[in-house]
Image (cartoon, rainbow, N blue to C red; front, side, top):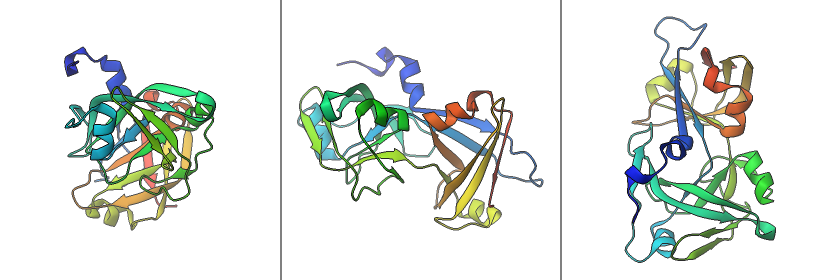
Length: 220
């Protein structure tokens, strides 16, 4: 079995690229914000992990993500869409969940030939499915493929600072060579969460987030 050391580091880092930026234009004491570009990834149930990788198998953490308790796993799977179009090595994120799902960017959906809606993680009702292929088996999802909706995790204190509650929409302004304002960023406050906005790869690349010099998160 391969080990974490044998994995191409660039592949793992592609899962979540974390960029810490000073927020511009805000009052003193503005919280520090991390903006993460989330690449395509999969969440699996315990049962589906065993189907795909073998009886008794569990996920092998290889990189901790920014939010405590979450990780990129060593294991990858193939995602197969209609007409046998496929993405060969899609990373699994842990820990396991109660329902398996696949989170993609728009260009991924085009490549697979899947018309996936924009949804928050876990909101899977009425979404299309796909086939997930692992080294030991295959899982056919009847539903569960989504385009990840932009959102921002935050603590209750952060939510109070911004004057928002769960489900409120915010704006995220990126100062870069391609300055962009992302509207409709969903606030997701919760105990134990760090202030972190999630964009998908298409959104991050469009705003040239890697070369950003500052960022503003605000309630419109």
